[in-house]
Length: 194
Image 1 (cartoon, rainbow, N blue to C red):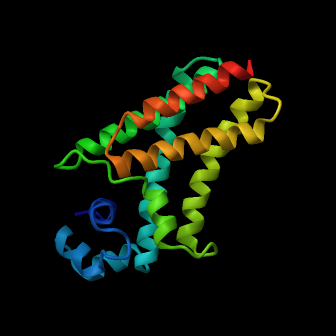
Image 2: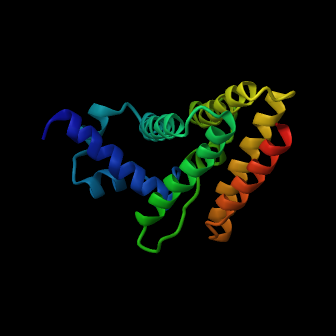
């Protein structure tokens, strides 16, 4: 097996176990056993468990934003429509995630979980989670400016709160319609702003 495919096997296995059990509760031995690899293979690809967690988050971030870029490009030129496309994309992304679990549940936002488990603001894993949220906020800010919102920064923060609220509520309550409600609220705010 080539090094790149072994690296991907470790990432896939680690991501699955982190989602199921949490970052802290998942041990290196569990990852290597589940992946069917030697510990040396893992350590040849990642210096430490923290590096592995960061790599999993980095890959999730990359995949999400690549998909989001496509969704925004397909949404046309209206900033309001592109904002709503962000809500649609995240709902679809989460919907795909629920199909990957045998019970159809949504286990929540990996970045929220990472920030929660690695609470120290200066911790690299917490910083990676915060950077993910800042990227989302930055897109909302850009789109708010494009729609000439009088307070684009505050509007973007409100949109991020709606999106994060939908993520948390969907996980806690098991109600995926939270994304529809968050989108409807965002649409109302957009209409009031134009």
